[in-house]
Each structure stands twice: as structure tokens, then as C-alpha cells.
Amino acid sequence: MSNPREIFVNIKRCTGCKTCEISCAVEHSKAKNLYSAISELPTPKARLSVEWHQTAGSIPVLCRQCDDAPCMHACITGAIKRDVRGAIVTDTDKCIGCWTCVMVCPFGVIGRHLQIQKAYRCDRCPDREIPACVESCPTKALVFKTVDEYSTNKRYAFVEEMSEAIKQDV
Amino acid sequence: MKHSSYLIIGGSAAGIACAQRIKETMPSCDVTVLTDEPHLPYFRPLITYIINRKKDVSDIAMIGRGPYTCGDLNIITDCKAKSLSIDQKTVSTNKGDFGYDKLLIATGSSPNIPEELKDIRCDGIFALRKLADAQRMSQMLINARHVVMLGGGLVNLKTAFAIIEMGIKVTMIVQSLEILSQLMEPDDTSLLKNAILNSGINVITGKKAIGVISNNNSVKAVVLDDSKEIPCDIVCIGKGVKPNVEFLDNSGIYIDKGVVVDRYTQTNIADVYSAGDIAVTFNPITGQRITTALWTNAVEMGRCAGLNMIGIKTLYAGTFGIMNATQIGGIPFVSMGCVHTKDTDYEVYTHKTDASYRKIVFNKYGTRLIGAILIADITNAGIYRYLIREGKDITKIKGLLINHCIHYGHLMQLNG
Image 1 (cartoon, one colour):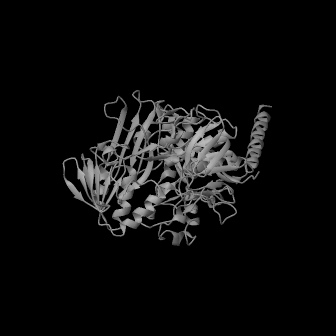
Image 2 (tube, helix red, strand yellow):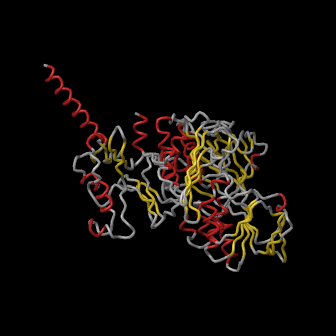
Image 3 (cartoon, helix red, strand yellow):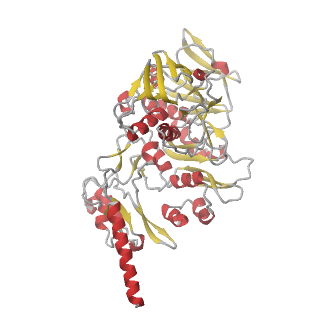
């Protein structure tokens, strides 16, 4: 059983700076640098977004790469598949812009590129070891780990927190 | 007689999705798929791209594309099921008998042909359903000047756009007062109607075709119920579909319009399952029995049936009859759940601008989302679909839904 790394979100650390959005769009540009990407056509798009919630604050929302991905099964052209890395990717050439994937994604993370009438989505940065959003996040609100690593870290963090609390009590 | 552990009648969405599900869970088991078409499985919704030659047959093949990566399916083409014996566990076809341990009935549906047009035998009358129909139509369009489409549903609209792009005149005869009457109410259609008019498609509403005038086996004109004649060379009938149940007559399978299945996609007979257009399932909002003719529903149900067939009991969540996303004349739209609200006590909110439209429907208490139409801006349509389907209490996020500014962050907070 493969154990691919996933992008986890630590909402408490997100300050809403949207650096992840910029670096995602740049990574998905032809030029791969911000200054040229700005004027590129079709306009490079960020595949994740930082949304605002009035009590929870800023929340990065991105593709969860579902095990049983509704978008992949709903696609009426076979444009969406799971690649060798385990990431769900959309083949732009096969996409006809029918937006069925947009209709079935419960996270609302599939975008519509109106200049080319194609769907776009997070592809976990196939050309990179670590996805651009994760690498660029200045507060480490986004982390790229396997589920095991992430949950182990969570447990350590919890133990540390508890022992701090106990120390203070004593 | 050939025997397989898993026999699937029907090689389209439900059948192949089921086969894929079985194969990805149990790669070594034998799965046989029978299809009555001469082609290997293909993405049926793409046949309009065959009509205007934007794609060829290999572009729309299913096997090897998207999630359909399981290798060694035994697919038998040109094989039409004639009858089913539940005692002997065999299916008779024009290519002999096939035995099974578990059977999936996924023979889909065929176009409804209006009674008055049933007996007309001549080239140039189409009811677009299969790849072969599209190929034949594509061929005939080379010399066509005017195509008359009967019915204003989605398939006909998509076809109409494909044809008008080829520079051929298109007239659409719609019996109801407005196009897309299955998917929305007349008031909801104005943006789409404009897009259709701008495209050059001529729409005639409130009229019905009562006959076709032909000469030497070719179409000359369509006759309307006001006895007006519209000269044309091709007629395309798009009046919905009906389940292909004929071969199940006297088989013992319980039929009520389609094949009735339980919540685990099994028919009234053990080891016989059904999915897709032919299956009668239920609407989770109303609880009513429905059949649908939607690719996405068929895939979902087929996958669920696949799991049940290999012994992993899986509940099918049901589906709404209306669950469409597409783009008409450059305008995207989504229609989901209960959207026909005339003479109901539902709580309805509409919002209209020059460039967009939305209609959000709640139950009469205003506590649950039960339907939505989004035209032009379809952002986060999936969240609406999720909420309709789950039947969640949306009181806390109602304003966000009405104003279409909901995002997943709100759902996270709602779910806790």
C-alpha cells in the first residue's frame, strides 16, 4: 500500500497572506516567475484559495485528492485520472468544459478557466518535490507529509502541550 | 455456454464503472461485459463531437481513460441480450448463452419516439443515442442545409450547437412553452434562451411535429400541428429516453418502468443487480422512485453495484432526477434537485443580473436546501449539491447560500 504525502492545513497558523495562491499560480505558469506570469495568457491560475470565515479566520481550501474522487468518476470525457504519484490530475486536452466536476466536488476546489473554457485543479505540482504552496507558506500553515508522519507530529505536539501545562500547574 | 463469475449486460457508464470497481478490488476475477453496439465502450455524452467531427472514435473511447484503467475486461460487442433465465442463471444472446454467478443489468435506455412519428421509415430521421447514429448523422450532414430538432432538451440543444457550428441551419421545435423544461422553469431560462438566439438557432415553442413528408426515402419537410410545413433534410428527435427492459419480459425480474432495485442495487432476484438508466432508484429528498438518464448517476450506481456484487454491502445514496452541469452557447449552468417550484410551498430565492442568474430552493420551513440553479457563475456548485444530498440543516449558513458566497470553510465550521 502506497503512502503518499498529502498537503495538510493547520488553520491556526494561517494568517491569510495568500502567498500560497501567488506561488501556485506562478508554478502553473509557463515562465515560472512572477513578473512574466502576470502578463501570460491564458492567465496562470492559483489552484487553492484562502477563504475568510468570520470566527475561524482565514482558511486555505484546496483539493483533498479524495480516495474515491467524485470528480474523476463524474467526468464525462475521462479527462480526470489518478497519476503514478497518486495525485488526481485533469488532462486539459481532454476537458471539454462541461463543468460536471465542478458540480460534484464537495470542497468547491475545481476552478473554471474562462479564457480557455477548461477546468483546472491542484495537481500536487508534478515537477516539484514539495508543492509550491507548501514551500512558500511563511507560517508553515501548509505541510506536506504522509498521514502517519502528520498524525505522529500531532501526537507529539499534544504531549508537549500537556507536559507544559502540567509543569505550570506544579 | 460461456460462464463468468461476473456478467454485465450493457457496456456504457454503469456497466463499465461496475466492471472497473470489481476489477480494482479483485483484479484476478473474470468479468464479462456484453454490449449490443459494434463499438467498444465510449463516453456517450461525447457523441455530439462525432457529429461535427471535432473528435474521432478513438478520442472518445472509455477503456484506458480516466478511472477506467483495469486491463483485461472481456468485452463482447454486437451482442444483444434476448432473455434471462434466473433459474439457470443464464443470459441468451445472439452470440449464444452466457452463464453467471452474479449479474448486472445495465442495458440503459433508448430514445422515446413520439407515436405519430413511429411508423415513418426513411433516412434522415435520427434519435441520437449511439455512436453509430452520430456517425451516420455526421455523414448525412455533409449535404444537409436545414436540420429540424424536435424537443428542447439538453441532448438536442448540444446537438443543435454542434450542427450550427458547421454552418447548417437549425430549427428547434419545442412542445412545451420553453426550452429545457425538464431542468428549469420558463422564468429561469432567459439567459440561456438569449445565448441560443444569438447562436442563430431558430426556436419555435408551443408547437408539436405531427408528421414528416418524405420522398424517395429522404426527408423533405416536417409538418407541425398548425399544419405548417418546415422544409428540411434531417430531423432529429430528442424526446427523452425509456429504459430497455423488453428482454426481461417474463424473466421474473420485477419491473415498474425500469428494473426496480433495493438500496443495495439488487433486484428482487438474488445475485441479479441493476444500475444506470434502466434501474429504478429513489430520490433522497422526496423518497420517490425515479429513473434517471444521467452519466454521472449511472457511474456512481454502477460502482456501488460492483461493490455489492463482490459481497461488500454498500448502500446506494439515491439520486436526484435533475443533476446537470453543462455549457450552452458559452454560458455554463448547473441545475440540481427540486427546481420546479411553481405551485409549491417551497421557499425560493432568485437573483438575476444581465449576466447571471441563480435560484436557490429551500423546503417549506426554510431549514434545508433542496434545489439550486446556477447560471453563468457556477462557483462552488458542488457545495450546493452536497448540502442538497445530505439534507443538512442549513439555517446557520442560509444567507451565504442565498447570496452565493459560501465556501468550504463555512461547511467545516458547520460540521464542527
